[in-house]
Structures are given as C-alpha cells and as structure tokens.
Image (cartoon, rainbow, N blue to C red; front, top):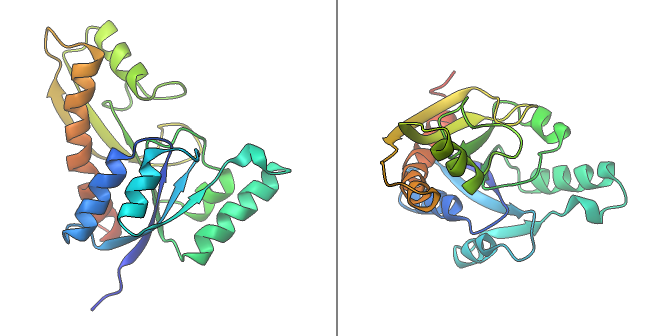
Length: 199
C-alpha cells in the first residue's frame, strides 16, 4: 500500500476547514495524513481540534523570534522534521515566508471565501469578504481553492463553487452558506493535488 502524503495545516482561528480535512482523512476521502497543525495564535480553537484528533501542533509566532531569519529557519526545520509534503492554509492570517513558498512550490493551497480573482488580496479575509460582496451588489459568491505563490490570493485556481447571493443575505448568512461550500471543496481540491490531477 502506498504511504500517505504528509500534510501540515496552518490555522489562526477556529479551524472548521481544518476539521473538514481531518474528517476527510479519517473517512478515507483524502489520501494524505495530517501530521502537523501550525497555528499563528496560541489560543486558536483549531489547536483543540488537532489535539482531539491526535495531531501534533506547533505555535509559530514569528515576531517572538530574534529575527525573521530565525523564525523561518525554525518553521522550515519543523516542517522537515515531520517530512511535510503539502501545506494547506485554513484561515491562516499571516503571510507565509517566501522560503517556505519556494520550497513547497505547487504544494501549498489556500481556501478563500469568494470567487477569485474577485474579492481577493490584502485585507480580504473572513467577514471583510462577505461585507464587500454584499456592498458590491454581487448576484453570486462562493469559495475558491488556489495554489499559493508570492502574492496574496494570486496563485492558480484549482476549484471553485458558486452559490447565489440572496436578496435578504447579510454577511453572517452569506458566510454560513459559503462555509458549507468550503468544507465540501477543500478536501476534494487537496486530494486532486496529491493525486497529480492538476498537472
């Protein structure tokens, strides 16, 4: 039997997309194993989700290091130690160091709660996105999974799914419906990437 691809998931918060990937892995829908969860906050609830699933965690707060070089070195060493092959960003609100982006080129994915290239880029995360979609009078929204490169929300789009924006939607109701799509498409996109279906 083939050994499973080793995945690290990066989080900053509640980790519901992390949970969708954990569930997919446990149910055999993901031919990869989540071996490490990296969090930019020491109180992120996603750390509890990882612990409950028996997954090791690493709190990575770059500003606590003497230099950015030290921080990047520590992160790369941790990823090496766990033999990580793929990185999935799941609500990770920090910029990934360029050394990591380069090392894992075409092996880092992110989930974004909008139909990229619309409503992407710096400052476009979480509720900011849904507020902007509604303010712009968009008729549809959705979620996108894309490869991560040197620019925010710029990499090749791997999968998208659309939903209508309803006349009575507010940012909360739209966010809840988009989140369901995120949980559906993220494991599919990561599985397709691991299996080389995007090459």
